Length: 124
Image (cartoon, rainbow, N blue to C red; front, top):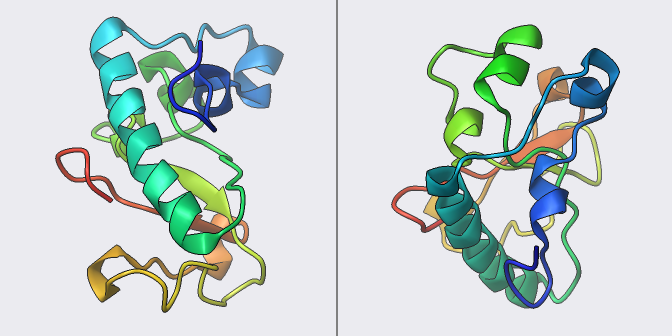
């Protein structure tokens, strides 16, 4: 299912861990709406970066979230906290300096060299 010009639903829901464990990671309709808003926000980030964005994690079903030890109130379950691979461990993600400070994420060594962009009311 195409969400926007550059993002499809599977980019946010495909999970190797869910596949390995036989867990259904299909989002309910209300989460698909969040994924659409997320994809729209990421289109803006993509445009500002001038480069494609890869999604590491965009959604986790409650069963998958529990299986991987995610927090009970994880924003991943609502599709409000995408995880994006970052270029360097401990470095700012590529959007640093190209987005307002409140929209800039910082990678952490503790999260497998990735950046997490919080989404609030559909806006990153």
